[in-house]
Image 1 (cartoon, rainbow, N blue to C red):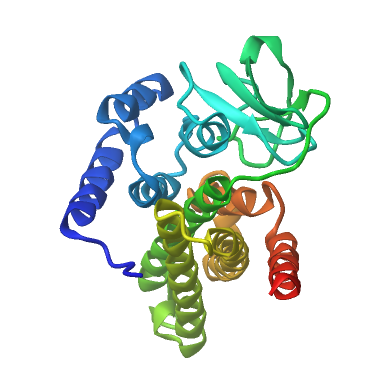
Image 2: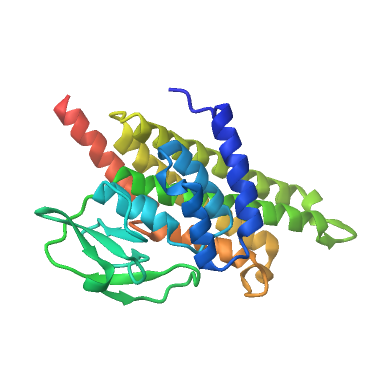
Length: 292
């Protein structure tokens, strides 16, 4: 299974990167229209992962993640407007449920798609002010998180972690102590290297997950669980080291680092942290062993 980008995918990544950088200051409504006009919601899994990686890098505030990876895999289609899905059986902390035009509910009798205005969604304040969260009032819910949903959260977290590393490297190159940049200290280099290695590992697993979904590979479930767990472990290392290397200023409202720290942490906690998916992976392999 080849997980190297082809030329078209490399061009897509460059185009997405340039588009996001050019339009990131636009109001959310214009951002959303830009994404729709470019057809990003219709991208197949690997190309969608490329888009989400770049949107994670800028902590995108639109409902793109929920629409593409929470609603679409449950409903089997794109929503009329924006959408999200309830797939963990609880209806708690549902991404963008308070502003979705359509909400897909996974129930015992199958997937039910309801208008957002017809579903009781109570907004919930969270530590990431750029994310919309809500508790959904619904009965007969069951758990069945799609692989694409896990992959979407994983690659979004990876994108945020890449931004944290870039900001941190820029900071340690210019911040001086004892007359030299702190980035010249060996301990600082080690921490930056640990961040880089964690990001590379999580990136590889997230794109591997996207590729198994694209090819409907029988390993797709395990790959999605590994991607989500690895992204959670990645954000823990990147959060800790990035925060420490910036000093306390990294978590102040005046510093943009806090935006990406919060986005990475939120992507880890949504639908269960790394430990949850490690246990699910072990259970999955135990079932395979028993069946074999």
